Image (cartoon, rainbow, N blue to C red):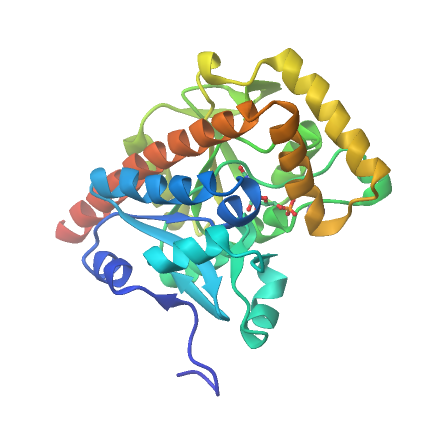
Length: 314
Ligand code: PSU
Ligand code: MN
């Protein structure tokens, strides 16, 4: 007990045991469940991400806030509540203490999830796509806290780049400013979430989970405490049709501007618009993106656990 509050987050027995034994653990976020995917497909998706990890011999740690308690390793009932309850809010790091005292149930963004995961000692995190710099930044100044938080959070995060609704070149510049390393997995091009290739070149490419684990160890050795972003593209045959994507995105951006959508509502609004306008195709692609990232994160966590064990034995 620190001060007059219990230490947070609350870590589930399964996650605690896995971490203590040096077995692989992968963190999963919950805003994608509460605000990124439509009900009830979101609940099925949340369960399927956990099943994929379990089948790969990795302990899943879905992270969220339940009745004011930040939790690492949600149980089945918690997942249902995050997925289905109307009153669930979206929280970033700045909201955590407020949600605790208000006893809210909340999906955690990449920023909040990585903060809680790192506090629990988890090294690998899978998501769909990061937040970043929004188009029209010059007027809105809308830049996700995901970027500033990752600057100071030692975690390896697997994502299909950043959401294509964003200004991707500007987001890459900001990742550089914030000292977040960006690596293409088996590619030298930055992916764009729904699309395989954003057209942006990357300086670094890695081709196996073992290499990524080795880089994690080297970063620890050099004292780098920022995040490592592993950009994992969808295969070309699974991406959203680029022409459809561009058309629907332009409509979505115009609708957001027309309805004066602001703050943390922007990302959920755009994703929901894309879903309606593509008749659910964007959701299928979003799920493929997330599954691909969960699968790669499982391999990285396994390679990391093997490396850590080998080092401890030596
Ligand atoms: N990727 C998805 N769906 C999502 C998000 C990412 O496939 O819903 C969420 C993540 O939780 C990310 C958040 O951290 O959107 C970014 O929100 P904002 O732009 O308000 O920071
Ligand atoms: Mn924002």
